[in-house]
Image (cartoon, rainbow, N blue to C red; front, side, top):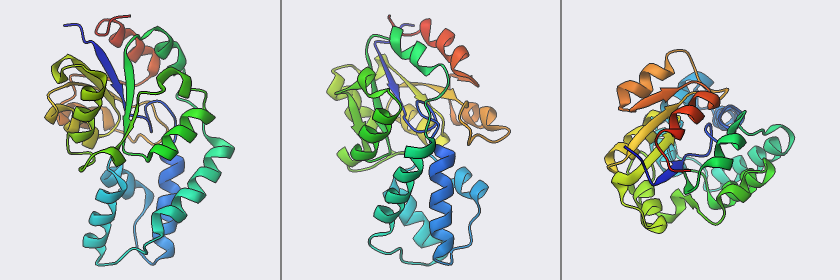
Amino acid sequence: MKFELAIFDCDGVLIDSELLANRIDVECLQALGIEIDLDDYIAEYVGKSAVAVSHSIEERYTVQLPGDFWSQVEQKTLKQFQAELQPIPHVVELLTVLNKKCVASSSSADRLNRTLGMTGLYKYFSPHIFSAEQVRHGKPAPDLFLFAAQQMQVNPQDCVVIEDSCHGVQAGIDAGMTVVGFSGGSHIRSGHLDKLMDAGAAMVFADMGSLFAGLSQLVPQ
């Protein structure tokens, strides 16, 4: 089957940002006295929106995060990104040949514009960059992917989603789309490919070169 539209998650798929960002998230949470380690945070929260993470953290640890918590985290994260952020290796080769594509990410619109700009990827997607801020429910709900498909004027069943998180895979499947799992980011832990398959990914790839070959069979160029 050929798909009309490729919908990319951003963090951990287009840019190698998850490990950098998650380290700062954990450091800021630990500074509040919340006992959580990096591996636990990655396993539980990668792919979820900030709203979903906040609700879970507050319920799990019986705390109330400060009102400016995520804005403070964002400032520290963007500073770190300026120094270290890189695109996923070989992603440009893939984006160059794909015709209809967009981004649908749990990150804020401001962060998406900044990080895609920092890494030289903005030009491949603008203006088709969609944030969880634009929908009522972020991932793992399907709202964002459905919104992206609507904006791109493509039926959900004609979309293929590229995701690195199980929460994102769930969102894509619940949107009625085919999902391809990617595990080439530096935050990925052993066994993650199997987790993506168990979550329902139709195919999984450990590097962008393999993903390139797989998508070339699915998406018109």
